[in-house]
Length: 146
Image (cartoon, rainbow, N blue to C red; front, side, top):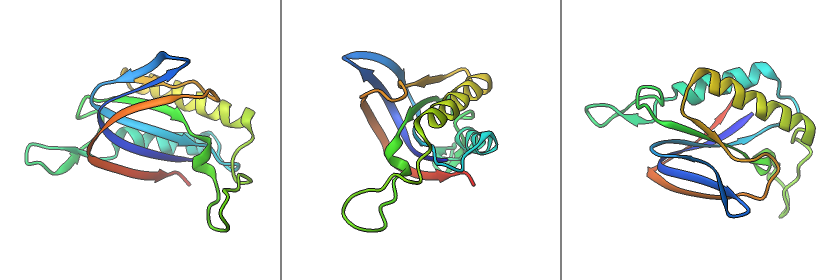
């Protein structure tokens, strides 16, 4: 699994002009599910999402995680993160999980995240979504669980 995370001061996601998820300060995580992903990788990625230290401590250093910063977590499925872009001028998607498996694992991640942290919002799997955010920093990292 891959997560492109961005530290945000606010973020929201809309489907058909309806806001379906929003957070204030926290992390926006675009989630890509790959063929070899399973529940164990979901758990490892969730641990990173909740504990990766990207928020400033009292001295201004990135030493606090999402929970210490009391931030929100906005999870959005992002099929294109699983693309193979190493060759040519068009992405290949053979490494992406099939849609049913991607949806199952994404929803498993959402469920586990909500069990672990009260401030979780999501987009809608497979929908055409419009994402708005204010990147704080900017701070952006690609997390992978293997």
